[in-house]
Amino acid sequence: TLFEQLGGEAAVTAVTTQFYANIQADATVANFFNGINMADQTSKTASFLCAALGGPKAWGGRNLKEVHANMGVTDAQFTTVIGHLRSALTSAGVAADLVDQTVAVAETVRGDVVTA
Ligand code: HEM
Image 1 (spheres, rainbow, N blue to C red):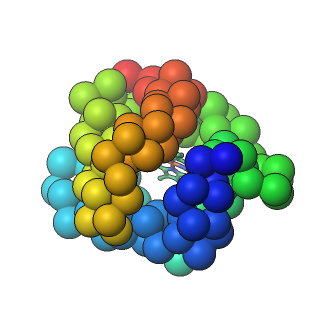
Image 2 (cartoon, rainbow, N blue to C red):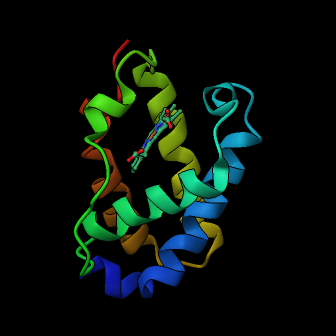
């Protein structure tokens, strides 16, 4: 699975931590996370991604469409955030084809997150 190829839960968690660091350093999208506990956020998103990438544990959290409703995320903002995931993967030394495949999995939630 992609989960195994990336190096399992520890590797996905490390990438997710860098992903949110990149987001928080980008003023065009950082504000969405004002007041959010980023340790929790990282652990939830890492769990979601592990499941989506074929890991052994099912996602036990909330439905992503309900979670992101009313946030007003635009298509362009989602694209920006996907770019931050791509750079987190690349800076972790993940091979380009595996980066592309992982990004493609994250892209599957675009329709649940974008509402504006
Ligand atoms: C939760 C924003 C993209 C997965 C949240 C929360 C915010 C947020 C503010 C916290 C909601 C709360 O606790 O009240 C955004 C923005 C995005 C984005 C602005 C893009 C522009 C994504 C993507 C994924 C994702 C690409 C998955 C790959 C999650 C998960 C949660 C969450 C798993 C927690 C769900 C739960 O509480 O069970 N998001 N998100 N988000 N987001 Fe996103």
